[in-house]
Length: 208
Ligand SMILES: O=C(O)CCC(=O)C(=O)O
Image (cartoon, rainbow, N blue to C red; front, side, top):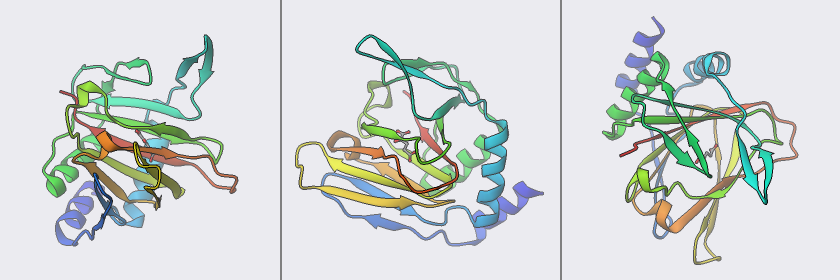
């Protein structure tokens, strides 16, 4: 029943988008990709059913816990390596497959992998980086879906320090990063001192 509703919603409503105009980048933001009710339902489902794991990175010989929980899902067994971590995906879930087909309907891109991140509160974060790993290919399309507490998403140009941008990624929103964005820009999700509840971010990617 829920899926029929999601399908009808996606087919019937015009999903409004906002192009974010930045040099050397191609960014499109859909503030209401999912309506509130559907976004609430996905948030609950993913919080309770994705197999969240604590990953660690090595820094100066020390094992450090990433400030968030993560889980990688895919339609194949192809691994994904980022931040020095080689992750083996779990098989995609029904809900992730549905979202993948909604994304295909919207932007015509078929994604193979979904990296899910759970930011438990304002202390969880993700540092500056670009999604520019070799296996994503040149000019990758990244679809970033946000559920739960709105968080500030920041971008900075890799070679022109005057170029910066920030936007709040809201519940049910979708940010598409494509073209040369990853080649020229880094992004991060900083910590916040605000008392906030948790947030789930799903980034859909295609590994070639
Ligand atoms: O949580 C976010 O919005 C950022 C996620 C991100 O940068 C990534 O997965 O590469």
